[in-house]
Length: 606
Image (cartoon, rainbow, N blue to C red):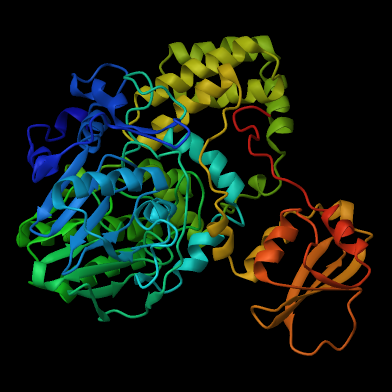
């Protein structure tokens, strides 16, 4: 569907996004205790103007909608904070106070949102906290609504498996995900018609302090009911959809349905560009279908943890049915073509949405995209290898680039040809060729500059917010070098939320295998506050660990300590207060093999 065919005359989303407005934070800027700007929604004031040539009109429209900021009434007793982070915070009034749902990404933005709510609804205490799913923008601000010392007696609910998934994402591939998130959300880009205008799902992420208060109650099944501060809630468990642990829920007396992040006003990601486990579009579709039937006629409004609500029962059913069909169509048509022998990129070029979906604003690819979602579904079933053996053992990027440039006649000739593709209106192949030139000869600043210009061209034409941000951040780093992120994920509560197994895994994935090839050691950790013994074995460059009841052999070193002390040991704070038995030097020997990940590793250059 062409841009001109999109229904720009349809203003229902604007009416819904403005409905229930109470007040905005003025100025719309959140700062940290040190005065650093954590989130600046006022930077998007330029979106009130007409769409320029440097932006896709559809993405510009989405930016206009997502940049609306303030406190909104969804219905009596249900409020939302929008536009103060990538996500929304929902507040449901109970008999004694207020239930907070999904307290944003940062402590600072959550506190500012709660203060705005209390300005208009009174100083109601937080009587319950609810996390809809296991992504950080839905729990990271928890200490902003429940500061230390205030959580006692406050129930904290989450779907089963929440804690494991919430923290493991920050352990196993967390460094790479954080680095790529800089590109995905474009937080380092200037907020302007030429720069960052949206991430599609919201404007961008805040860059404050990420916290996590562990849940006290798990939701383990669909149909489970809980009453929080006099408010009855009926849950639908939806694991494996937008997050590994996720849930929708109904507020029956308020006739309001929360869809978490399972149905929002854009096509979502099957595989996010920052990296994650591939999601199951088939299961996602089925849970949306289940929601239509399970909650039946029990609601008049549906809201989510991003974007704006949908009012009217029939409108909600229509919305859910279209979202259901969207993910089912992506899944089934990809599988159909896959089984005809097409590869991921081939399917991505051929597959088109049905007209009714293509013209639905909430199915447009602002965050996920049809193109990369199709490739993700292919990856879920067949992996990275497309079956063509020429792709089985290709050279890595630098070596491959050097050979392509040599074939093209050298750097100068390759650069001349790349300019020809730019002039011919083929920026996609120009980007491919110029990328090879940059990887083959990274000192050629003229190649870097031309590639940056091509990335800008592709970014300015992208309807997808995260594609735009990736292209434009890549252009910025080609010109100015690596730019790291300021998001604080080092909060001690995040570390305490990790299981001991996860903590040990976090060490194992940082062992320099070749450096440790010839070392051989065993260390026992006796955790007195868990009444468990963990044996660590370093052998053949691999650090493995297991739980022991009664050891059959003696470890070369045994440490008896608590979990907080273990965190201190892993942070390099020494063995104060830790009981040691055996050769204490083994600990330093183990740590000598442990590396620190590079937070600013190159992406657009070798």
